[in-house]
Image (cartoon, rainbow, N blue to C red; front, side, top):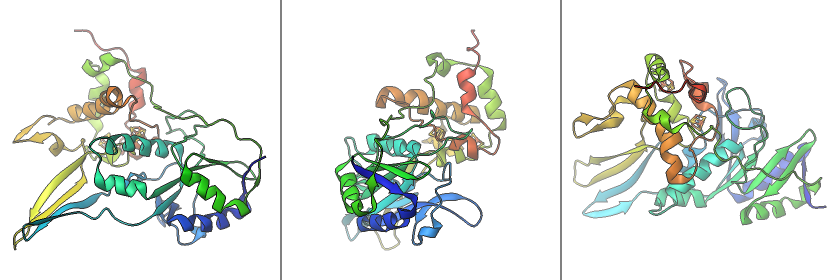
Length: 321
Ligand code: SF4
Ligand code: SF4
């Protein structure tokens, strides 16, 4: 039998072993009760009893704001892609699938150099979770989109590795492991939100208006979405010549998002809501072969007016003209 079982009592030692592979980040909880991934200097700060962090792990691969180009003295210098090796521990399957989705976008031709450099230095250690009412995912979803995955049980964790780096982690921690029962076959999540009726994109049914009548365009649903990656690029000239080009998160719920050359393609909230929905569930699917919703439930959990896109799956058929 393979040595792939870690007793809970050895978790702290296991975390120390992970530090050999890079700076360790893990789920923690702030004083105000907000769950988030953060550097784990003290294992006592680890908080595995979470459903979803407020901000998903995309923050490590797509910084909220980054300098991508600098020009000085007629010379151009690309931005620094950031820190060194990092191990992200305790990532749920939906967020692993979210990163797998971003990989599709930023690692295909043309490869994004900053994302690619950060991704190459990131080791992912996933962990099983228990869905709550906000989750869209099937129960016991397990993602293989990581280096190592920990399936939690009452006594400890069953470890499965899915990459060369995962095997290296397992080898480094071998002295902490014992023989465990065979693991159940991993099941990959894929898209979680049921495919939509294609007619919905042309529909005029009342749910759009209902959502738009309460949406406050705060953009929280997009900020918190693990697969939303809209960005804006701005250039700031320097007083002594040259300048800086930065990239920062943008948000399709904001009124400014649709502004192009003085026109605005989506001036109304209804248009912006519908655009986000269609882009996420219908527009990406033919391009990437999957919906870009991984079912994390953050958009509903953070929405201040409780908009729940799942209502659309049980929406009445569109009104015929
Ligand atoms: S649309 Fe909502 S449930 Fe789906 S991945 Fe984004 S935040 Fe999560
Ligand atoms: S979180 Fe809710 S209120 Fe805010 S933009 Fe999204 S749908 Fe609108």
